[in-house]
Length: 450
Image (tube, rainbow, N blue to C red; front, side):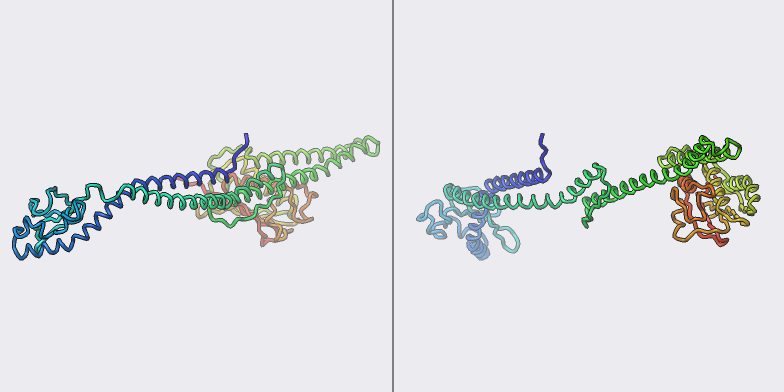
């Protein structure tokens, strides 16, 4: 079934609304104009008899009653008999304050067609005007007038209807332009092409928000695709070196170049363990990306946990002639997962162990304040270029040749660290250290104790 475009629907809808409005105007005109004309003619006739009303008020003031005018129709309205019963003079009635008729042909008092006569603010009578027996309007005249008015309404309505159709199409296109842009963009994204740029519309309404939001969605998808491609490329690169070493060693053993002794087996074992560690880190990072890492939150004294973890590294630091200084100020509790936090400190200390020259020094400070726990780990030289500090927590990123795979790093540890910190609603930043190396600052929300 062929779909109907929104532009067509909008045009038809506005046309129907305009047509209905035109029909309503015609009905209102037909039923309202004729009564309105009758009221208009009645009002005009009342205006005509106002001079008589003022004259009668003067007579009453002079005589003090209506006796002087009672039964004087022929003297007051001499043309009434000549002009017939439809004449204005023939339809005038005078009533006193109590509603008793004084002048005119017999009739009733209807105050809707009456002028009030007063003396010093007091009602002294009513001058009433009876409507013509055949009505104010001649039927033929009324029908002719109504037809002319309906023709005018039809012509104006038709022009309004044509204008409505044109305006509807213009307005529909105006509103559909950003929607069509989003639709084309969605089709482009669905085809797998993420190199899409959505032009800004400059609109400040909901359609402008829709276009802007879709543009951000396209940017997010493009960044995700680029990240995925980088992930695949970096993973392939990281696996290529140990696999190449393993292949070379195995082929050397097969060709008899190397003997299967302790040294050659140690090389194989070291590369296999490196691969195992890399795959495990990749697996954990992938789980962290999709929220698959399990967390069991409970109150944790993070200061004590950092100190215990650092003590476990002290012997390895000592072997490399690297001093370790630990300062924990008070009890610093957070809501966290003990195992993941221990993994966090292990990765950070392992990073300092690998990339601090001998002799060197590592300083650890744990402080609290303003509802936050701040853990600072800084080491001595070598440092990291200023422009590279912001990228230290990207997967597979290495700042410079001094921090290379030759020191045993895969470039994944700090990326996993950032995921763990984020899961604990904290922040992590890297800065240059006054000691010549890198200063890592981790800030976690302090646990409120009731």
